[in-house]
Length: 251
Image 1 (cartoon, rainbow, N blue to C red):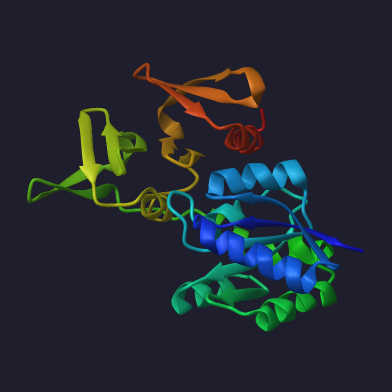
Image 2 (cartoon, rainbow, N blue to C red):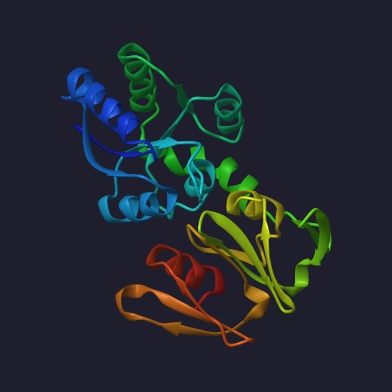
């Protein structure tokens, strides 16, 4: 039986090379059914295609590979991480990944990883394999009551409770609060890793929302939603994240 696979990597040459290695060396065993260039698109692709196997780059802008995998809804594919950095590979492996490919990997290393996935039952074992990773990333990670934000050579200690949302704007992350907005050196992924995930929700690849500030959830066409804050701001949630939000809130 041929395994259906997806490739999720922000670098086009890396996706092309992996696709070629699969076609040339594993064409009778693995078929690539789709590609995505970021975590948000990767989640949508997995939901759409329902693959048996997913090759996921660890380092991607916005939602990185490890955070993306933690958000995959069941039934999940078997995941093989790819990375150019040993420390990211080891982190992924320790977090529950069965295997990873360290770039630049060759056809023999790829074949070994796929053979291991096949021997473990691939998709039949995916939920079991991902459980430690999901538990690690989805558990609350409370931050101190204040978030340090550098502004014009000074460090502001912004009360976390006052943060309504954090958004990527012109490649920089802006922290919006009840009293104003501040540009920060944090990436959105770094903020998500530091903030309490029971309060801050990843609405899409460029938006993190404090659910304590949400007053209304409006449904939109196509399965998306809009979060209306107490201050009246309307924040659009992607279709994939809207589904996760409804599951989280049980609505």
